[in-house]
Amino acid sequence: MSLKYLQNQKNLLYLMTIAMTLAFATWMVLLNNFVVERASFSGKEIGILQSIREIPGFLAFTTIFILLLIREQKFAYVSLVMLGIGVLITGFFPSALGLYLTTFVMSAGFHYFETVKQSLSLQWLSTQEAPEILGKLIALASFTSLITYFFIWVSQYYFSFSFESIYFVSGFICLILTLLMWIGAPQFKGVTEQKKNLVFKRSYWLYYALTFMSGARRQIFVVFAAFLMVEKFNYSVSDIAILFIINHTFNWLFASKIGQLVGKFGERKALTFEYCGLFLVFYAYAYVENAMLAGALYVVDHLFFSLAIAIKTYFQKIAEPSDIASTAGVAFTINHIAAVFIPFSFGLVWLISPKFVFLMGAFMSLISLILARNIPNNPKFGNEVIWDLINRSNFKRL
Image 1 (cartoon, rainbow, N blue to C red):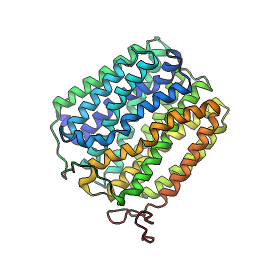
Image 2: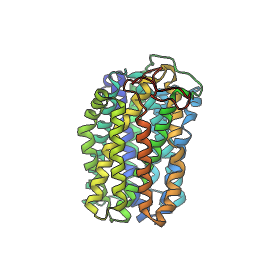
Image 3: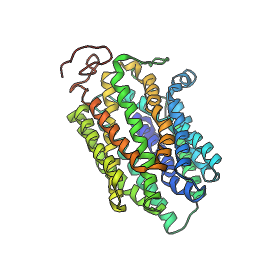
């Protein structure tokens, strides 16, 4: 790869996305089978592990303090190094304590990187191009995941590669790509100087609420929908890999178009469509008894979550430009408040009845739908909501 390629901010975002996705996708697709086959995890242990995984996300607000010492772009590289190391060593610690520790290292890198990446994206991209480029980043992540899952499936199904070797190779490639970016890319500057203190504003309350509900709802999908496939329907590693390949094929083909549709129809309509669809999907999860139908629900579920970029573009439109970096950290913390306790608490509920876990997901989708209907058709600074519950103002013009 020519270093000239890295002289453009968008290209750097693309390569960062590839490095992150390669490592994290490997960790995620192997996780359920690895913890069940090697560490004999039940719903209780997987819940604890996933709660630990979300702790760094809860601490994402500390990003703003770290940025007092290091630039955002370099911090993105450091985060990718942590992610790569965490994935590289995962296969060598097949015990509860070992998996909890390696998961924390991996997750710290992942969540810090995602926080900084969101900030850099919204700083480097204009409001006009942001929906489409963010959609392209999702599509690229899906394409990278596709390639990753394909090689995992081939390596497991035909060559019986060990968990250790797959984790090691994936983490190592992430480290090599990060080194390439660190050496080859210049230090880009944002259009607006970012505030170096925590920003928490009443005018952003709807963004915070949508972000909180997104984090809570997504945990049910990430943790328990995948676990359902393995525990109830006995999906193997190759089965899960094929399911993920189908998942990301749809995202690869349609995520960029979804970003364009968000830009065309607006955040209010996009999120309304997403939450209506997710309500139906979660309700169906609660009662599904057919393995093929469960897999189809998983694919549809994943596709709906692509519309979540509308939350980011909504914030970009209503925010003061200097608030983006600080608010990105605050938003990730809010996103993970529920994510810290939901995997563990819902893991206990799972032991009683998995159905109740997914019915709670349907209820969360309804709450999110109500919130989404409060987004104006033309959100901007000074026109953040239709009905401002925090400031007790009257209805604003759409």
